[in-house]
Length: 79
Image (tube, rainbow, N blue to C red; front, side):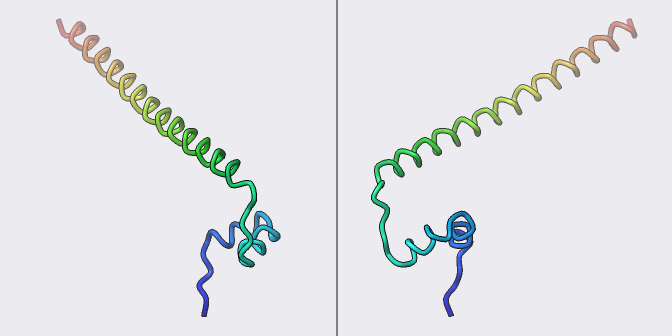
């Protein structure tokens, strides 16, 4: 019994012909374009990750600033 992988299902859903070519042993002739596209996807992934980290840092700094403002206001009100 052969195991069907999720990537095979994804390929089949995206393009049944591409799935058939892959299963039949045909290799794509545009290897350099595919490698270039994979590199662009990796670069984009790194940018998305960095953006998420920067957003988290920004929220943390905003929360810290608000906390310091509240502490300053409470300290001023008690004096």
